[in-house]
Every structure is written in structure tokens, then in C-alpha cells.
Image (cartoon, rainbow, N blue to C red; front, side, top):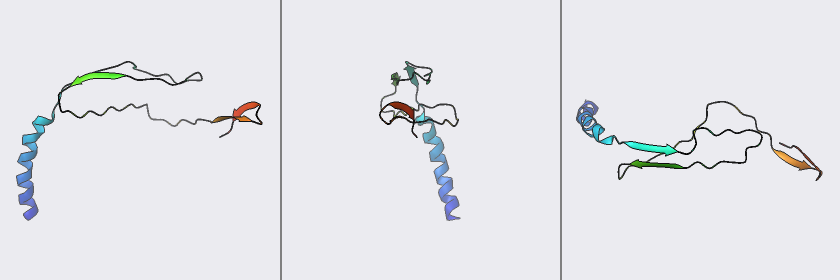
Length: 85
């Protein structure tokens, strides 16, 4: 019963402060897609935007889910580049 009273006091507070959590964000990135192929040598992503003062921002860069197997290249006997790992 004690937990129920606490919950009944907590619920109105959640609804009162839930409306203040919204923020408007405008963002622009210099890449929509980064192609990684045989000749890939890295890329730089720049993000610029406007947000309300005092807003904490999190930027997540993600790719589609999948399993990729990457092989490490290395010199063998000082002459040949081969898959070493």
C-alpha cells in the first residue's frame, strides 16, 4: 500500500515535467552515405546544427546490421602482402 501511494504521487510529476523535455533540432551533415570498398582510405564526417541552449546532444553514426569479415593484410617474408589474420 505504501508503494501505491508513492506511485500515485509520482505519476502527476512525470506528466507535468514530460512536456518540458521536448527540443527542436536542426542538423546538416556533409555525408549521407560513406561507401567502404577496396580503395577506402577513411572519411571525415562533419555535423553542424542548431539546438536550444542547455540541450545535451548525442550523435549516433550507424550502419545496417550485418556481419562483416575483415582480413588483416601484412607482409610475409618481407616481400609479399598477404592475408595474415
